Amino acid sequence: MEDRAKNLEILTNILHATCGVDPALVIESSRLIEDLNVDSLGMLEAVIEFEDAFGVTVDASLIPPKPKVSDLLDIIHR
Amino acid sequence: MEIYRRLEKLYLFHRQGEFRCLFVPGAEFSLIADDIDKARLKAFCSVAPEANLNSDLDGRDPSYWHILILSPDNRLLGGQRLRFSLNSGHWSSATSYLEYSYPGITSVLNEDQRPFVEVGRVFVTSYARGDHRILPLLLKLSSLVAQHYGYKSILGLMSYTYISSKNIPAILFLDILQQGIDASDLALMIPAPRHPSILKRLPSNLRPSKIPFVDLRACSLHQVVSLVNAEMGNAKYLSTEKSPFRIPPFLSVHSRLSHAVPIGLSEALGYNLIHEILMETDLCNDSKGATHPCTQSPLTDLPASLC
Image 1: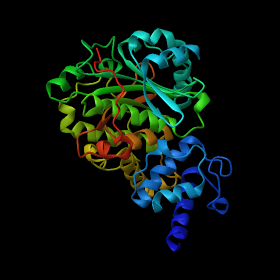
Image 2 (image 1 turned 180 degrees about the vertical axis):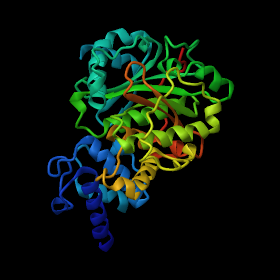
Image 3 (image 1 turned 90 degrees about the vertical axis):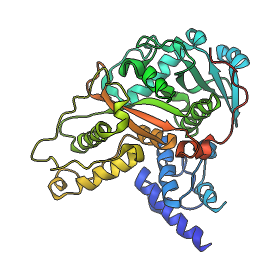
């Protein structure tokens, strides 16, 4: 659980740096498109940074169409 | 939409979730030319508005295969064109844009046992612009198709808009690429581009005493960008640049998701503000391109022959 909180913090920083998302808005249940205003290219840029930060490789074409922050965190914790 | 319904019956080769993916031969291109032209125009103008194009059909499409992605209600969501260096007969500048930019490249690389798939004109339609799944799916499909037919390399030209002589980070970025390409042993194999780069140089008072050398074959565009930012951190640049240098998102995403590395650089004909970076994705067994999870699901419904 502690790891998940730490990973959420890292993901928040990534979304802020790549998409200009306000860190205060990022919680697990946030919807990236509807709540955080992340567009499709922004999402993919965030995924790239995400891969680097967590040392994972992601098939971006399989991320759900309207993902939540928790969907991205689940990828690391699988 | 009726035409896509008809094409789907003949050329469906893959399904991913709700998307249907078609592999359409060039002989059918005239049926979809108008739709694709409009989609390409919108996509290209979004990255290079100064090009001011009226059409993005170059007359070569009948010589390519086309991957199209359709929605459940038969709307076009995205596409790209492919040609196969060993399977598609005689190639010339009239039938291949890559051959036009690098005359002789097909025979040089074929003779060097480096057959390749040329990928180009990648687009996502405005209808699907908000869907982050389409571009990665297109990149994944070109890799899977190439692997299916036994190819180990994908080449493609990616546009990069060079804004002005005052854009110091962009010039530095292109200079580093050019120097790495000039020094690469691969540069000896690839014919000179038809329109060699005439990169404008940095003003002498701002020019680094030595542009950092980068081994581009072991390097991604993102690593080159990091290098540019490190250079820009030098005191003499601090007064002019306030935010980190970034390459356009489409270029960034495309290069990274394809695991492609730069191997050539030239200026696009007619658009002297647009550079084209020749990128290669290596699909050999242990390369990043071949081992990425995006390329791990073999295709089964492709035609046996590409002729």
